[in-house]
Length: 55
Image 1 (cartoon, rainbow, N blue to C red):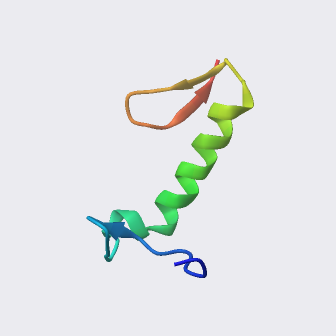
Image 2 (cartoon, rainbow, N blue to C red):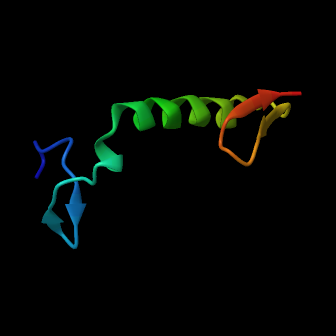
């Protein structure tokens, strides 16, 4: 396993990701939100629809 990267495992067995888990659009959205969360910008507000707004 030392040379294995980028694989998904479930119950210690290699598995396929879900449709949502392999979505490039969702990956991009998650990356953007993660950057905002660690940036320390306290003015970022998440509305109930999951979109972002600055106040």
